Image (tube, rainbow, N blue to C red; front, side, top):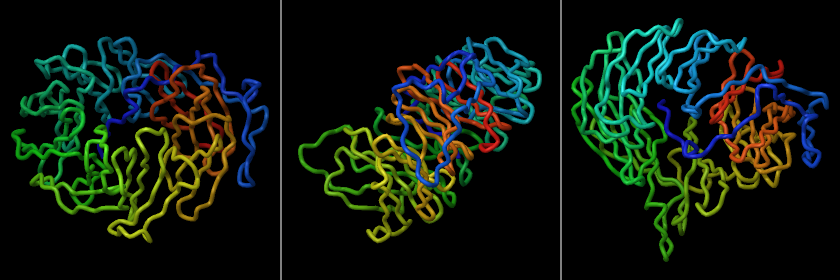
Length: 439
């Protein structure tokens, strides 16, 4: 499934402490309160301390993508240099000047886009240059991307254009300079067609179907759509009734969620599914939608309020009897992830098992949550007061906290590699050795 840009990429990430910082319960400020645990929670020992394995300054590019890791080696960029770092030891294996954030990682090589409008391939083991090719005559902005799909490297430039290259030789297979890719995404090959998209005036989305052999445009479809996923060879899209940023004086009737299907072979939209009719959706926003088996989960709320409610629908059934709201648990934070969703009511965080509604209460700082992620058995949470906590997903037990002291409290996608949690931020990457309970 393609990586779709998240709205968080426009925000500053949290700036964390130096490499000497430790995660500790004892280092908490004295005015920070703790919420009481339920019977299902296990309180962490007072002497719990999780020192950083290591930390390193980075440029933060790609922090919301999957971290590029191969055989225990992490690849990241800082000061226009690509580094290969041993995760277990924190030692740098090699570096490549004028490098870029890894776009493609294979068993033996790394592809990135440098600041000279070149697509570059280097050895993952040594950092040795294998080839580089000029990929654009136009200036490359941060939206440039490359993906390896079925034996082709597809490249797109946010300034415009899509091209295909041979991954072994770097030879150009085809190029179409007429496809706009501002805030664009390369989705993949479906039914013998390459599907990409970009924005129109930052409100509407245009999807393109391109011929795999020539890059020629086969079709174009435009509308107020958002990508949800792929099912049975069709793209599932979320449809909006109107542009959310246009305020109407009169109520705008509609539905909380409307799904349609896009046929990659033709670009035609069909199979509209409407869920939960509402009298007014003028300022309603669907922040998150996920299809899991026969259910659809969506987190939606008013654009003027900083909170979302999770609702579950039964696929193909629009009756209220097939609808379940999780509003009573509080504002939605994350999930479903590994069968759980996470909420906050007041300052208390809870995790809800979606199969049986079992609730886990979390030990946590008494502050509003800005971002929460579950990775394996661990839950990583950053708060409005600047603390970052690590809890056990099944028990809610608190294993450690770090006081960030940052003004913007966000972090990128956390990865756990052989018992070490890698937490990327805009300016740093933290490596934390997790206890056995979280491995």
